[in-house]
Image 1: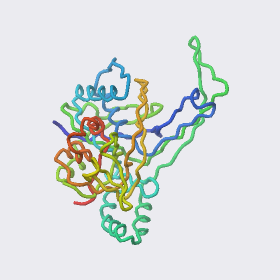
Image 2: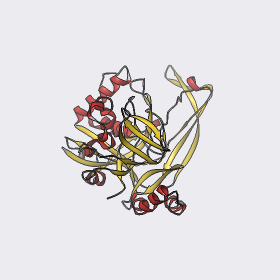
Image 3: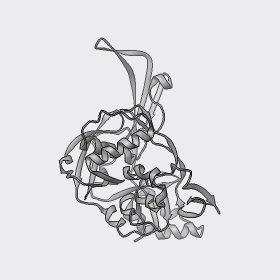
Length: 337
């Protein structure tokens, strides 16, 4: 199996759709779409599968069926797993999401340098404002661009304005750099390099590049447990494991006994997995620990090199989360060496 890093460089503002309907027929005459600031790993995995596989005529009829189709496409393309994403600037510095009240992109090297000071402040209820101010000051900025658009209809090959239907889109503009994921793949992916592609909502244009760098993968090969930062949501689709609170801490546990993770910084919420346009299948909404959260993971198996945080789960739960893990959900980066 080969391992590689795939970089996706935006060539224009992106529309990374969050959950919710957008069609004016569903939302009324003033529909709007707001881009989120961080791509889902499944969006990046979908981009890769689009360019690595031939078009599949089989339509999935439900969410479980869609997961099976993802597995089939990954098997046929040789794509074994996706891990990420993270952001790389022009100086090859890595930036990662962090939830400090709101969502910011921070330099990973600087976060690690200040992490022990941040941890001491949190454990002793001390002042962490100095660290958080520094991280905010040196974070990557994302700004937004709003566009108002009309709705069209086509009749006999002629497009006309659909009276009374307006909608707005708010696109995300990122500083110079690329989103990156690391992948395990059986086949050669060098043909993907320097390829233009469409990405996210409204087919925004990006450039794909492939290189041999894989810093996250190399760190995970030595990871046994400790504090980590989530690069993508840790989706909890089953009744067990589940999210509980104890002594003011949010914990992920299995069958009420085995501790999997402790939430230090971040947020527990719900995450809609989107809508499959080609399939016309709505993806479900699940509880999740959101990307940018800092967790303390208990001892993980060697599978962490492949499946990230999900490797901390006992094997009997893998049937419910294997596809999510392969697509990149639950990806993390260690914060301590």
